[in-house]
Image (cartoon, rainbow, N blue to C red; front, side):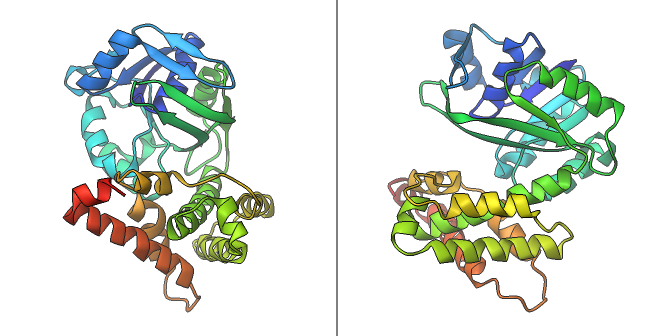
Length: 314
């Protein structure tokens, strides 16, 4: 199976690197700067699950894409989706499966409109990893899960084939017959985590120490209620795990959105918080914490657009 991984950052670089390590046919679609970095220093991954050093991994530019791939692994930030779709168009053919690992669910409609609904799978990943300035990928804990499945039906022959290709690598590949349910559950968790850590500008443990555990719990409940209104109520096990993370005393956990704000970077405000709030509807339920959190990150984006230097010095 020929696999095109879009990007070689903390997510695409990690999962693509693991697949290369397992002998899979993987090519990275990257811009010229990252291509030069990979050609010079290789793909370096530092992980508690085992380091990887791959010299000159295969790369390709968007202009050089001429033939379709069987699987496109899309791991860009949600705000870069349009550019990513433009760059990957030459790799998508009649038999290509596109597996996005973006946050939220709005990207599914955009991908279906561009490439056709039949080509799009549902997917998500659970991993904490960062791309260092020197090009190394640092995996921050032992979690590295990639879940995927058909959006409108149970498992298909292509999903089984993808599972076979991914399962040989050193990460957990999980074929799901309820991928939209899993995507909504992840969305609820990351929206609550992003909302509370951005709003408080603090790690979970610091919020708990300040007496704010009830606020984190209330925000989680608001997000879960919106998921339920849209037909995907989080399962009890998922809610319990989320609650434990959001109320853990001494926890250093912060959302990547909060870390991006701290360094003055772009954020997925609309895709994670704004879109969820829009899906709340007019049922009269109180979503006050989510509205405040959403306004907070939108204000950051407004300031960043108006005063980019000021934002980057936060």
